[in-house]
Amino acid sequence: MRNFPRILVMVAVGMVAHFSDVLAQIRDEIHLKPKSILSGDPFYQIDSITVRTRKIRSGRPRKKTLRELNQQFSEEVSTGPFRWNEQSQDPMSIADIALKVWDIIQDNKAVLNVSTVNVKALPYLAKDHWEALTGWKPEHGVEYSLEIKNLYGITVVDLNYEVRLIYGGSVKGSGKYIASARVVPKSVNVLWGFNLDVSVREVAVQNLRTEANPFASIVLEVGMNYGSIMKRTSETMAYRLNADGEIHDLTTGNVFFKRH
Picture: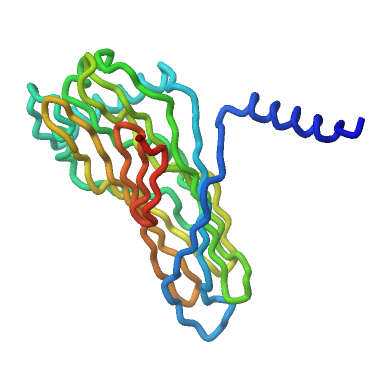
């Protein structure tokens, strides 16, 4: 009976892993040097920014999800200022979208329905023949937990968001494309007297290989504007999401889901 508590713990861990629809693994803790916010009151001065990361894995994208992405893509094609090359399978063919910026946190609150904002790197073929794209891999991503403290060691901003990727689709085995690259807010808590706004910017949609064998890559920036009633400042986190599933944190140099 001496090992009974240990057995209970093992069973409990197994049940959590079994019933959870997202598997997570703690990865790293990063300490950023905050930009100075000068104030006569130490309560409103930022002392530290800590970022904790963990990898998250979900199941394969459902047919409903892919249908919704297909519909969204078709609408973007019909209304967007594109310059298409109909013969090309190059994901650069959709890179002519004007730079887009959208808010995910506004006035300390997560913006509703923001998860519907997806950046894609797809061939022109997908407009009418989405079913020709096959081999999509299970969605995965990185969860970021950002904690900002003042000089008293009090947490004044606590933000959680996820960088997510649906990747790996190809046309008859050729190329690798991205169906969805997105940043999704999960939770935000801001102490009274402080304010937080977060936006996402599409920086680039690129083909890192050849037109005959495209390899899509998307760069997103997460811009944070935060501060107190005294003064505000900003930070920027940048991510490169590749069609083989790698997620590069360009701010810290970390690479998640690295391919060997």
